Image 1 (spheres, rainbow, N blue to C red):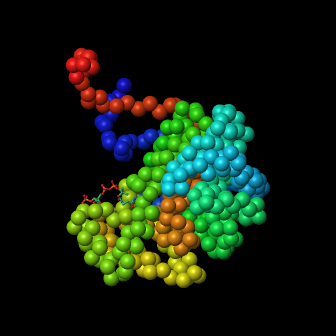
Image 2: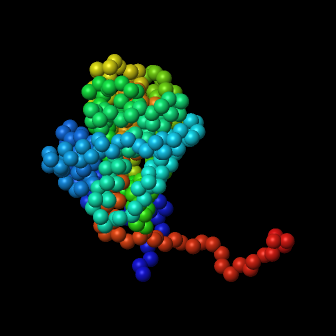
Image 3: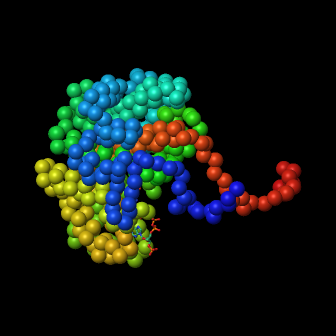
Length: 378
Ligand code: ACO
């Protein structure tokens, strides 16, 4: 067997062959199934993009209508799941609530009929449909309120915003939220996607696949940075304080949240689109001093760190958009999960099509032939 050099974090080691998405980090290009993200953000919807990712091609209008109908009519969650969620501590993080709830779905639909296209379709629809309902239900229940029932008259994104506030959202707000979901739906072999594929490779059920990926996404090095961007903008407080704040960070060698990326060495294309969405929101609903602080930060970071390829990543402007939509900061990562379910399910299907269980090796650096010491002699 070929022995490879050990690379911490498997950096640069291909973990799968995939045709789902592609990133060119030098040119700032992201494609889903070969289609540029800018085009999808302008012309597609989240559910159409999810279909594209999961089934490999854009749906016909009939296929899309049927898919949207199925998702719309599977949004409700069982009362037993609601009752279980009511017992979660209100101080718990919504990502932990989501991971537990996604896993609980597997208790009700645990059949592992992985060669049956009907089972696969049913699992895809159920997960896409119920994850937003579970996120919104926990948000209301942790404040002591009953969850809001999904509204069949509203599309995917409008319904999620409605379930959070019980008010029908503004159409621009719904469209912008939908574009945010498109932008976060998939991003090649990141930590949570790898986690999803490893879990899928054991041939367990898709609810366990999504629950393991949600757990992986929750960490601050992966999905959690957008919460920290908002905290940082609040801490800076004014445009005048941006430069001293950044100079202090650079002197302390502290990382500036929302900047830098392992793959992108130019501005993340998703950050460009999100900045435009933020501008649209502020134009309609009033400007926000945090947006002005963010723009000044981008200018100063580019001046100081542009030569190292440090530019805004997807998390820099997404928090500003969500905050303007009235979404609480600790729901930013669960919203990332709502979108990324599409990518995880696409990878689940791709993994099953050519499955081999993941079983990497290790470099053992412990001892050998150590004698057992009796407990009274230790
Ligand atoms: N602020 C200041 N300097 C930075 C930043 C940053 N945000 N990111 C990288 N650098 C500098 C490093 O200090 C290092 O400089 P040096 O060569 O002089 O030592 C150089 O750029 C390379 O940095 P690494 O940490 O080795 O880059 P890596 O590819 O490992 O890290 C990461 C990428 C984790 C995203 C990093 O840029 C970072 O921590 N950013 C802030 C957190 C963040 O925004 N995370 C969200 C990422 S997007 C996502 O997961 C959805």
